[in-house]
Each structure stands twice: as structure tokens, then as C-alpha cells.
Image (cartoon, rainbow, N blue to C red; front, top):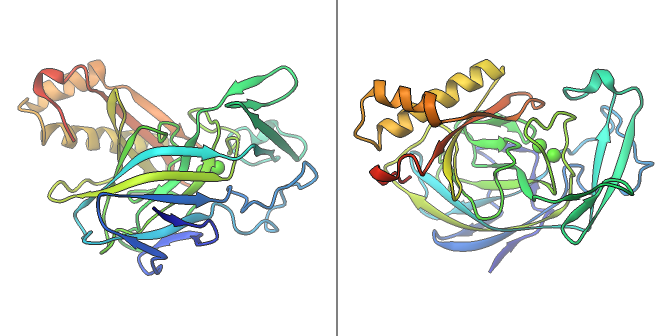
Length: 298
Ligand code: CA
Ligand code: CA
């Protein structure tokens, strides 16, 4: 199986980044990933210093997928996520959505044992490994791996986990998939600006769908579809996620706009992925069970 080591990585997603590996659709690939600190935090004495910590959020790749063209959808089945035995978190005054509460800089090492993150001597938190950064090359510009967008990127969405399928827009030939920033555990919001940051490896199967172009990523879980959107404010991101959901449903269901809007108001939860990255990420959930009589599929 093709395996991409963690030192083959990028710090921004850009159509000009050369691919470090290539595979054909339908194959499995393992991405080894460094943690968001490029594996340089080794003890609780390693304190965050603005400007001194370069190389945040390395994303392993990009992987070129043979035959991918702009307008296609890259299908990423997340088959497995394995995380290392130790993660790290930081609390930094003025950083993140809770930065005004933080009075001193702290790094916490979080051991991970038997699928639990050992937060302190009393709190053993069940892990839910997820991918913070995953995306294709954007159509234009040089998007840092700390920023989300229509190409994916730093979406910090806890549902991007084992057993799910992520659909990503393809903007360049080959798609150029990259990923990193694994979290052993993170809640919606990611309010302090990190999860349990951890190195690891992700096994995916990549495939292509032609003729179903999407404006921004869609995630499929056992229970539903989630239309993701990232924007400067939560309000804008929410509006984009709703528009995205409306067009997703209109293309697939023989229902009027009015009926779809009513149904969105009844069963499609608007959920916050994160509020701490340069753009905020919101998702709208489309429950499969509701639309089962219509056989809703991607
Ligand atoms: Ca992140
Ligand atoms: Ca992170």
C-alpha cells in the first residue's frame, strides 16, 4: 500500500505545490502525519511563543489522483485513524475564543492509553480521533494550512473521523489531497484553539466522481450528510452552509423549494465545527432517515 511519510508535507495549499506521490482512483493510501506543532513539543516546558513557533499545521502530501480534473469530486473514505500514545495542548493568553480568561502560558502533555486521553489523575476521556486539516488544492491563491475554505483545509470538524466519507471539490488536475492536524479528541467549537494534538496515521481510499461538482466539502456518516462552509463570521458561514444544503437537496430530490426549506427547518440541524480559525466553519446536517423514502444518495 502506498504510504506517504510525515516529512513530505506542506504548510499551505496551493495549486503549484508539486505532488509527492500519485495513485489511481479506488486505491488505499496511508498518510503519516506530524502533530500541528510539527512534533516539536516534547515536554510541558515547551511553551508557545508567538512568532517563534513556525511550521504549524503540517499537512502530509499532496497526493495526486490520476485522472482527477476540475469539476470532479474527490471521494475520501476514511478507513482508519491511529494516533500516537501522547498528545499535547496549549493555553495561551489572548489566543482562541477563551484567550481573555487565560492568564499564563501553559503546555499540557496528555498521555493516551487504551483509547482514553488522561487529562489528569481523575479525568480519563474516551478518545474520538479526527482529522483537523484535510483538503485539495484550492482554485487560486496560497491558503495556509491553518485556514479552511471551499477546498477543505483546517475545517476542524470532529465528525471527520473513522468510517466517514469526505467529498471534496477538485479544482486542479490531480486534485492534490493533503491532510494532517490529527486530534485524539476535540469538541465542537475547539474553543481554546486546539484539541488533543497528536501525531498519527490515516488510512484512506480515494476515488473520483465526475459530473456532480460541489461548492465546498460534504461529509457523509452512517446517519447523515453534512454540508460544510467556512467564512469570516459564523453568520456568513451559516448562510453558506444553508445555501449549500438547499442546492444539495434540490439536485437530488423531487421536492419544491418551499417544501425543502420547510424540511430544512424541521430536521436539518445547523452545527458549529469551529470558531477559532481565521475563517469559521459551520455544517448543516441532513439526516438520512428522513429522506429514506426518496433514496437520498450523494
Ligand atoms: Ca486545526
Ligand atoms: Ca489542531
